[in-house]
Image (cartoon, rainbow over all chains, first blue to last red; front, side, top):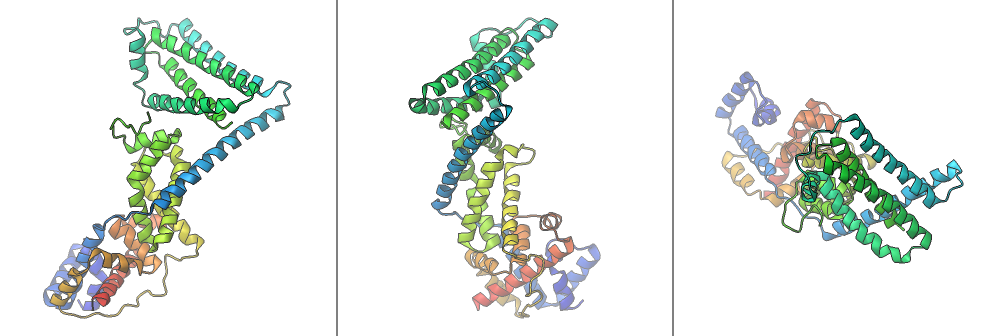
Length: 225
Length: 190
């Protein structure tokens, strides 16, 4: 083996990617060639150093720019969502006002929740005696959901934010919000009661999570006004 | 209280990602704090330019913000983020018409001959800054494969898949990158 051939194979050699025969040939050549041993040593050290390079830190301007852009996109996203929602409603050409339609949509959700709960009761799928009852037990049960804790925290943030914005709302907007919120809260109450009686009722748990998510969407929508 | 927990609880990346997807700004910031150095370092090494690297790191985290809802936790968050970063850099190269597979400088190496003692002494003098500087001087095609393989630990199969090149080309680019780096470092220390 000559030095040129060795040089072609050196990377595979130091990466351990050669077959046994080739590896043996390389080792023989290295035993006789100082120049190629130097090349091998250099590349081994180069690869070693490269695996342990330190991390670098960008300037604070990067995070500032990200924050600014994220806030702008959140604002635009919500406005677009509301605009799309209103456009869809207008296309339907209903004679109802927007708050009435919003209330109607949420009422449908509430009806679906209640119907599901009633059907579960009727079919007797959750008739086994609840082993755990009481408010503290419910809370313990509900808090076992990893998503729920985050949603509750998010709701808490949004409620504070919406509360601050209410002062600038028109009477109509405020009434629409209160009405919609009442529907969602009613759904949550129904779900909690059902889970209270039947702690293992997975369907009600899922419905409750959906109602929570609906509440987040409602608060996010009104936070933009 | 948010999932980032002022109470001292250290949320996992997946918990933070879920919270960020729900709009938790503090969780998103925590993800940035935990990963921005790694993302920026990868951008810096692939681009060889700190200003462009900052722009790209910024774009990566904006993509994280926009796509975090699609992160399902099937892979580690770091893997997902890493791949997102590499894709952003490659998109940056494509926009600028940078060819990764071929370079006019291929095969253009000076044959550096020296004794083993000289070599060992010289390369041992390579501090990290010298190596970083040399990496930044590599042609983009060499640099990309070198950073992905020798710095980030990707296999040639993965590199081939990411860059749309054959395994043989990836190996060839890596070999040439290493040889060029050695040459640059030795020249610097002369």
